[in-house]
Image (cartoon, rainbow, N blue to C red; front, side, top):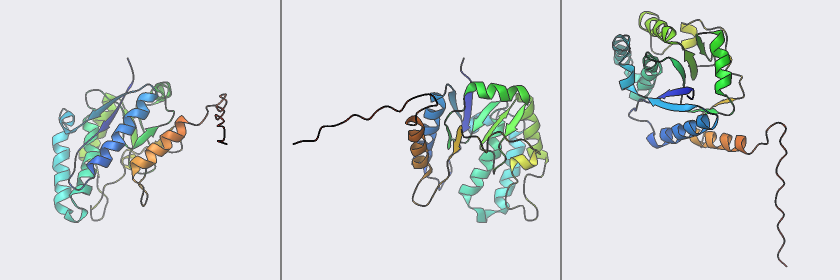
Length: 219
């Protein structure tokens, strides 16, 4: 049985659905390439958690008091925390679907799982994380009861790594993972496709670069 990696999709008004689907397809292609089984979860999967309803109440209040953020940004913030509830039954690995796998194998994940029951990156919001079922319950309980929003003002969310006091980060400088970022004039999906193409066409250690075919010039 293949190791699963999950992502979470929550549509939001104002988002570019075509671009998000392009990213999700590249995410799936790259992770399957390295031996993972990809599963896309949504809001319906999150409702299994006993902490889903109180967490949604908390974020509805957040959105109500911060209309200036816009529906799209408030929706993204809600999804960041609600997706943890979707892992309540299984635990496991989850990434944003703009995270490209360029060498992170299930065996590498197994080694991390032996060392800790909770992992995530520390450079910004959690774009990759692993948690066992008990760890998921601990995390979601903490999100409900803890200081999820920044003081003063409560107009934005604290980083998950800070809320959970995560110290060790094996992902941020890991060259086996590529977290795409939008650039002026270049959508994330383009950056992901470009990076994956480079990965596929770069000779691996010990491999010789294939000689280019010579073409005869026409007389």
